[in-house]
Image (cartoon, rainbow, N blue to C red; front, side, top):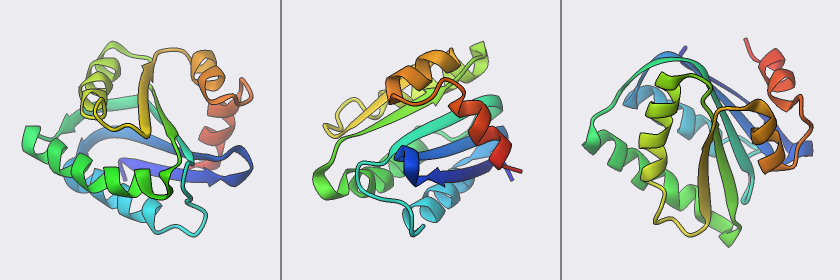
Length: 139
């Protein structure tokens, strides 16, 4: 499975990890699973670890459809949320920045791409070892 996730309500956080090759179908499946999870809530921040991402197989239309599906759910409840993409490699950085561009017009969702675990933790006001802790909880 290219995606795994864990919700940490005590940190107001949903942690996603993307690995290998990701398709639009994979991203939709992850999002639908998260959106219907009983611990998912309005204003919950997202930290996406793309350390092991190799490729994203989505064209422009796929990305637009995915963003159009995600935005109403992520903005529900009227609470702002941060979506931080930890992308430590040049490849993951480039792929994450392309995804982030689609969120510039979403007023309640702020997407940032970072290369450093410490910066990701600071942005979300979480413990510095949060990525390591969340990675340990996933298969």
